[in-house]
Image 1 (tube, rainbow, N blue to C red):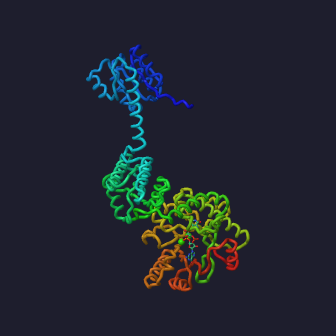
Image 2: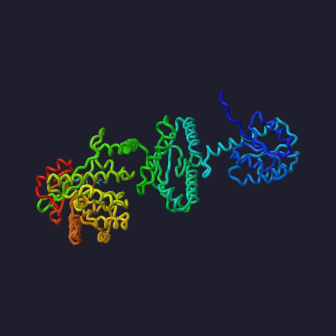
Image 3: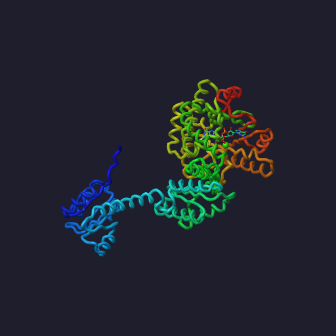
Length: 559
Ligand code: C2E
Ligand code: CA
Ligand code: CA
């Protein structure tokens, strides 16, 4: 039989006889530690790191009496939760009041009656232990809402008792909670959490179960309703901001309609939270439902993330090249390197599927370096084959530009493959420029000094002002394909494109139109004086070997 460790009790009593009497009574059930006065008792507390279930304390003692001892332990957060039973000479009411007002849990009178002592001790220990359990496990201290574990049990119970009723689980998450704690401090963070708790209780009053899971996560279960509106959640967020005096928190809410009661409550909440997280970046969207479409998408995303590392090691990523042509003489003047993922199970994957995920989790910087390396290796190989090479443009994601080592990384590649920097063009999307113009401008200036050519990608898709364009260090503008492809073709649209092209001439920039798919589109571009084009009308992105055939046909290429 396993032996449970006995609970420890500290007996503080100056009279030897009384002390041994108490010990005799307690020893069969408890592990007893003795002390002769308050000071010694404090030493024992420290020695056992406060690991006592109870203290039996004589009030009248030399050196340090019971009152002083009580005052001392109430000051110390390590010891202040240990219950104390005070022992007194007589059953007088005044002594009882004095002891209790100093924080004692109970009191027993001398002479000691074994049954009474054991009974008191057991009941005080039990009381404290269950109270601690309730506080720790059922209710969250800060907000007073149910803890996660308790919430799950309450929900199960409610579902069991009401098999005919329908319910929804709503969870919420603060997008920028860490920031709030960091910038405004923990008390401000706590104010926010309390305001959220209040919001949940007031909006579900009497009709729901609410819980504070942990950090900034809250949940509730309420009766199912068919419709939720953005405005409800927007108002709730505004109310929380005003109550907590922050003005800056952004909350997202997720709703899981309980249809299958067999899945664990915790999983239902996870699903609601996933729905909430899924709209993190979406301005003006405050809530989302968890549905099957979301479920399968998330599963797929997880699989992608799980296999990316192995894919990089296993050379599953391959670069495709798409040619760029000069309109006036149909000469091939360059190529863009676009990554493809040859997945052993799913086949060839488009970057649209995995690049956004890699941008979120940071893996993009490693994939990009891999792509740059491959592009440089191709350039080296062309040089060695005696082909007349064209420059290759590689995509540089915003995460790369924030890396202060970017110029070094690129220079190392250039040296590794003995290439002139000008044969590597760097495509940086326009929106990256607008996000953090100062830093981007500095880095890009440095890259240009080193000899790299800079192309501003997707121009016209972001919000860079013409004034800013003037300050941007760029060599070539790539017109976003929405310009070229916009339907119906209008005079205004054509004039806007003409204006931009003229501007590039004025600023002595090159210009490439992307996404050219038809002869009409090409004609229009030609009419406004656009120099270069890239698009399916000429060629789709293709494997390097295939591209080399085009290069050979093209004869005199580029630089
Ligand atoms: P992007 O940089 O704007 O690349 C152009 C995209 O347009 C490519 O899509 C290309 O295949 C496609 N495209 C080219 N001509 C036409 C056309 O005539 N019509 C249409 N509808 N599309 C055309 P892709 O290869 O799927 O790449 C999508 C995006 O993924 C790229 O957009 C780029 O932002 C990103 N990407 C691709 N490879 C890399 C990479 O190695 N690193 C990084 N950071 N991003 C990459
Ligand atoms: Ca690009
Ligand atoms: Ca583009």
